[in-house]
Image 1: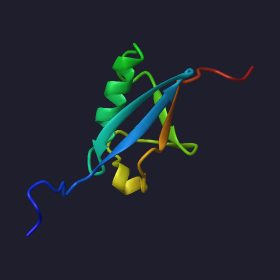
Image 2: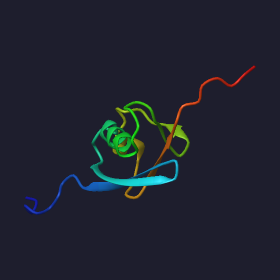
Image 3: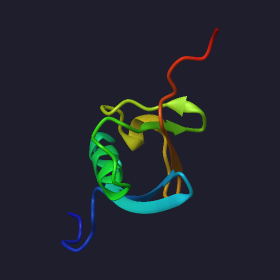
Image 4: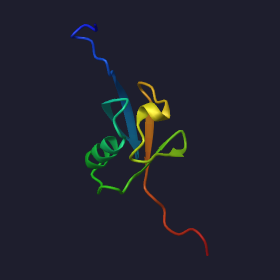
Length: 88
């Protein structure tokens, strides 16, 4: 049996960067990133669903989990505002 004090689902630190600001969140690797996105948008003062999040240039979906993406402790998610338009 596992020791009572042992955490069977360890938490990892995820850094979220947006417009030069950074926040760090500690989550379990099987938690949907939706919770990280909502907390980051609130902390950065943006409306829910406003920021687009990427990991190593790949867009993240709210239903993804750190375990699915192979994320490790200390990985950084980048936040971007969507751009509208672009051609003439």
